[in-house]
Image (cartoon, rainbow, N blue to C red):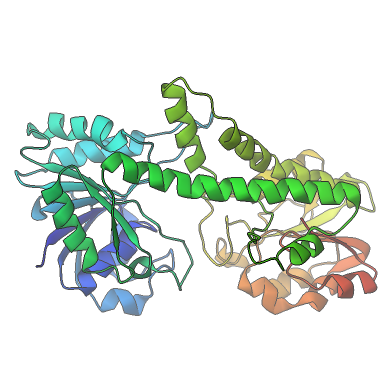
Length: 424
């Protein structure tokens, strides 16, 4: 059976999903409030690089920034961001505004599916009433709710939307059947039918919280290794020879998922008058890692920070994507600037990132502007790896520092060349 589907929100999550439905010949509409986003997608270009121009050309999707397009669909999928505010409290304002817009365009028999990460109860207790109020319809009688959490991994060309098993839940059996049929038509990896919307919401929230805790553990291990004076990577390489050791790596935890979703669990626990301990402790460790990196760099400089020229490489939250949301590179830079460090030519220009600034795409040119007193490789984009260890050595002053956050460069070669090497 083919469905008329409208995807609300055409970002990293919504666009690949819309493409998957269109590829299977469902009638697909895409709505986004961002005018330039609609313009570029209408010209078959995706600046997030999740889809190529060729992939966009191979399907038919009707894009619009006019919410009336929502009326064309019987199933509306809401894929809007759910960030946290400055106090790390869940910010549902975008989701609420999107629900209001959708509610004003609902028909009897419509199904509204949420893919945004939320705490349990949000879909039925917050979004449902908004849809009712705006539509004048009754939830569970005139229209129906569903929840199917996104599992997109930005920049991952292996685990694409169709290859990731999909959790699906509806507010009743008939709705769940319909959604399983819809998602099942595009998801090759299969469908997991959750017994309730709250179960599906909770499952999504704990997925990223678990990763956050595992990374927090190895981050704390890294800090201990540095105190002892041994290499974190050497320790992890030895430990992972055991079959059941989980091979997580230390790092700066940013982005729109792992560094955000645990706070949704903390908020739900607070509402229920429960105090989280493990989840909160993991977040505290990971939030402090930027300050830890800054201190390590300052302590390792061979000259005073105010005289040091530093090159920072990587501003996105992970490698090979243009997404800077919640990137901890910004925190590292802010800490170094507070210490008086100079960047690039000493005029504090934006640090280099080929995925963020097209002005300085060529890393070779940036390295030739050295030598620098320190180079911080915070995000190992493929362009940086292709430059090679020797290029980093040549761009660093003798005795200078190369901070290889994720241990991707050749430590021995760097140290043999008379440069100081540090990694998380």
